[in-house]
Length: 186
Image: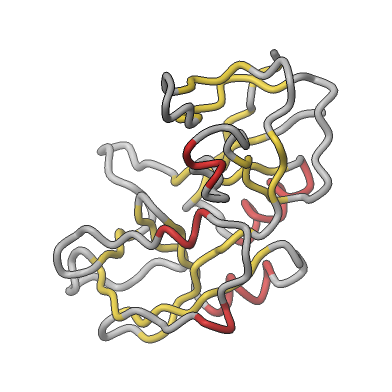
């Protein structure tokens, strides 16, 4: 099965197509977003901003730690029960929604990964997955190995992965702001 990694699209000048969102210190990160547990019931929308507040926000906003989408894009992606939409307040532009993926898969045996040495053992990058790998969900994350430091904490590898169907719907809803890379077969 073909698996895709979702990434922000870049413009010819090297900048991202999606506007960058962050906090005032440009350090916004919420570790809970890398966990598999539901957050909506205890989520308090953070107050964030565009990196350049004078710009008009794009329908997809980018941060190295998360993607946020407009209400229009959220409505198009609402068919996926594996996405939890967490509201964030973007100063001067209203509410956007963080894509928090609840679905995760274990990294299959025989995958090609870059893994930190012990004692961490965390996977930093997935290079290839076995061709026989078939995810349960259309959009998902990959769980850190259970014996790694991040795995013991219940965290996932950074990044969004998708089946062909998931990639097609996500790209259609986020046209021009996200791209896909096919994950190689191990």
